[in-house]
Amino acid sequence: MNFNKIYGLFLRHFYLIKSSLPRILDLIYWPTIQIILWGFISKFFSIHSDYYSNTLGVILTCAILYDILFRSSISFNMLFLEEIWSRNFTNLFIAPLKLKEIIVSLIFTALIRTLIGLVPAIMLTSPLFGVSILKLGLPLLFLFISLYLFGITLGLFVSSGLIRFGPSFENIAWSSLFLLAPLGCIYYPIEILPDFFQFIAKCLPLVYIFDETRNILLNGSIDYVNLKQAYLLNLLYLLIGIVLFYLSFLRARIKGTLINMGE
Image 1 (cartoon, one colour):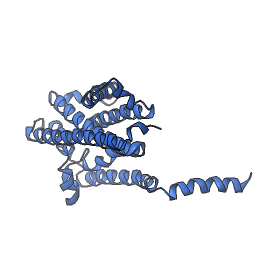
Image 2: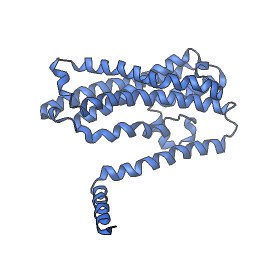
Image 3: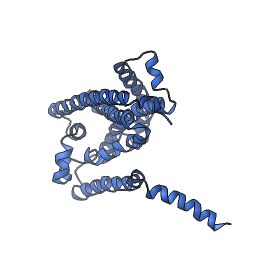
Image 4: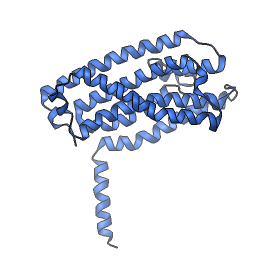
């Protein structure tokens, strides 16, 4: 065994990490987010151990709803990334397709991908754990649409970054949702967050969506104020996402970087 060769290969990867700030941040990012998220969850249950009368049902339902957001955003991003990976993005405009047609197509295709991934999982929760997300009733439809809109909006933000900065922006596609998880108050009320984080969290529709989910499951009532607030924020961010997508495309076209998109 030649230790000089081993050391040489080690140095190669070491210098790659050392010289790349995104790689270093990526290594720090994941454990930090996990610790923060589970730290808040543990803090909540240590203070309010009797908060949930049906802990399994509430936690599992919120986990499924969060997966709606996750799958919708990742599906949108993956569809866009596949066009980049295959170097097919510029070919789309030979048809020619308009930007709004591309966006609408990705939105509906992402919906199909989301349902394909979620329906089997939802069907398994009842026989395995005795929990059915359908117990939310009609509000489930409003919650689903709201989460899907926010997922698509995040997909638009990431896709805008991909157009503007190229495949180097790809890591954001995987990390953006995990960054929002602690602030989205998925498994605990907003009061468990520090004051500064509460201010940021109130700007996200996730807080109102999951607060209303817990309210329906625990109290059996519907607070339409939460739903209204979530939809207003969703529409605002969706509009910003569409405008940002168009601006990023125009900027990339002016700089001539569209033709170089791909790996």
